[in-house]
Length: 116
Image (cartoon, rainbow, N blue to C red; front, top):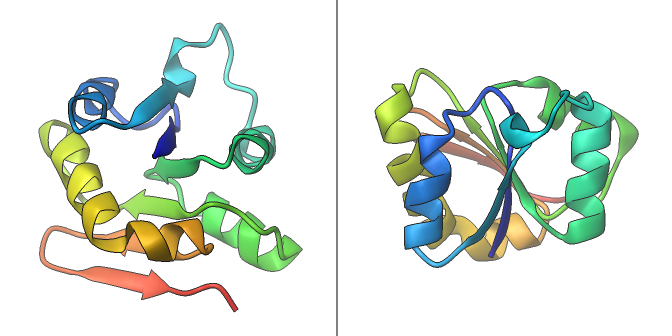
């Protein structure tokens, strides 16, 4: 699966996702952060799942009604667990993500908002 990591996600998360077989780009490797709207537009164009700590992506997608390939928002997840938690979320909810679901992943639970 294609994954686009937001700047705020720890770069080592990319390693865990790549080891799990995913194609990963990390916005933190760019010279400047293009902003949330540009990131979600890129993810839509590339059919990538966005992984972020920022709730703005879900709000942008819902308010603007943008069709996307899924958003994973990590909440309260330590930097060293961001990669493994993302890998687990994609493994369990990949089909939902590709259909436009938004996941909120916390240490003890996952909330899912399915595409309407």
